Image 1 (cartoon, helix red, strand yellow):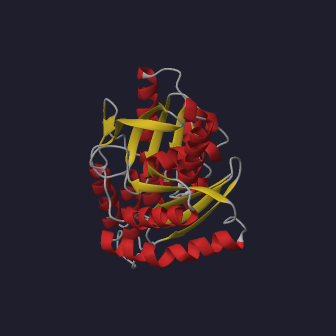
Image 2 (cartoon, helix red, strand yellow):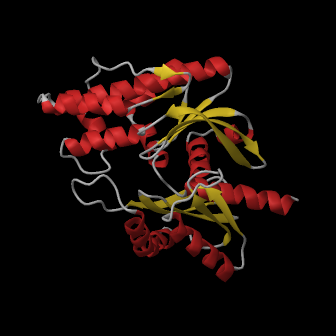
Length: 311
């Protein structure tokens, strides 16, 4: 059985197919004009509509569009009341139309649930979906620490910590754009920061919540003083890794013994991966499945259809 997944986030257009053990994700970043820090929802929606046929063309060329038995779509950012972003309408609408054409079921899940599933599968630990865990969703728009527990074959995520203002991804992207790098800037900031591990700021932790807006001010002050871009990038990434580490350790004090899973584009950062692996034994998505993708949506659709057939 093959499951098709579609995810149209505010950063990437993705379509993927999962067969129960393996899969293929076809994704492409949305285009952001130089110097800008993202897209308006109307622009993102327009780009998704234009880009989706090319993602399906890639799946077809790779031999993954035959024998589809179910469709899954990410219809909203999170599985909470009121969660909504217009960009997800592109994939949701197309997915339902394809399901009707193919005469197969269509399941709606959240973008965040897809991140958790893709992270667990790509890390080789899909069994984490069947037990409680702590999970970080570290992306361009979200820095949330979640308590995740099974809900059937899907998961239910409850926010227990994270940022109270800008996300780690926003801080990193704003750093990169200020230094003249293209948006999204995570990979370029990571490359510039390599070897810069001697400087950080200790962000105040309030229970499991912290603020990064003050850190943005410090980053801008460093740039105004003319400090080297590599030192600025290292300072930002060291600070992010340190506060995420301290928050995770505090959460494990409240929820002892739970595994820690990390997803989202920021989770592909090398320094963060090293710090959390060594200090907390955290499990990370493979970098290509840490960023926005449709693989998790396809995995969830496959699991939901299997349960329905077994019932």
